[in-house]
Length: 418
Image: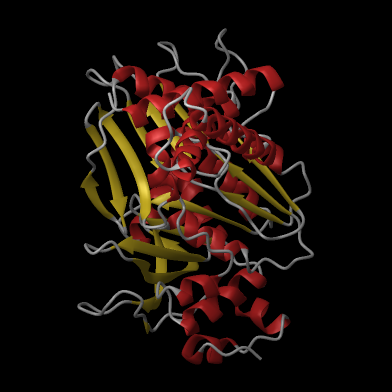
């Protein structure tokens, strides 16, 4: 071990002791913690000048390493701070991967089993979520907003599996998607008007396609006077609207009680006087409660995993059947046809670029158990991401646009608003 490593380890040990003695929370009191680290480095340097300690080759670099180790995620912190890294995952010691702009790569970082356990413990501590044999899966959110998913053996073969999903593009409005080339301006203008008039919108796509980012951008079009309630597995959405209440699920406690499911959140949200309801991701029986809310006149949005907009509609016709045997396709399919208005499908291409692939309208009609759709915008075969052309479809409820002063034909063809 080199002398510089000895010095860095000693400095880190001294900082940890100062944190304990002074009762400083490195995460909750960042400014005070930074001052503590600066004082510790100055004190260390003075003792090094007196010949009592080995000098630090780079005091600033040593302070950063100590800060990462104590307040951050140690060796993973540089990847969290790298704006090009979108996701970090650990398959085991020596197998730490990152995705840069959608392209995965194996890093040179080596972590021991104990180091991985320590990192997981630090990641879960702020959320209070637990991980044990009775609860081998966990979802949590870091204080800085990243989403963490952990699985432990014996569900995994041998090592913990850890995923940290960052949100490099935190789109607050559809204009942010236009700026990065994910969406043409005319389609953004149409979607902005569609949200403003209260159409119900489903965002579909595959894993890491940008569904949550697109949903977050759509929430930026909600009128500022309206009250928004969001329901999520873990907090991911950060709407800019001023009247917003965010709800997240809760795991069962050690006795196996106290769990709060997404379905329960949707039901509770309807008691909170929402003008808009947003469900982060529709996966199971909560889809029924969302459909009932939309059908009752509460405008809403959500996301779903699907390979196309039409697959997303078909999936939304199946998921509510999980709510119970008394729920039948004869009820669900017509409800989907009348409650859902638009589907925005996003995808991730081979180069790692995310963009909107199609916008489909739900006409309000169904026949033979199939919901009728109409093509509003689509990307032609071979066209680059971010390119959408007008289809021959028309959105439902045009009277809503007219009532709010929008010229719908011009919106569809040129993206202009009255």
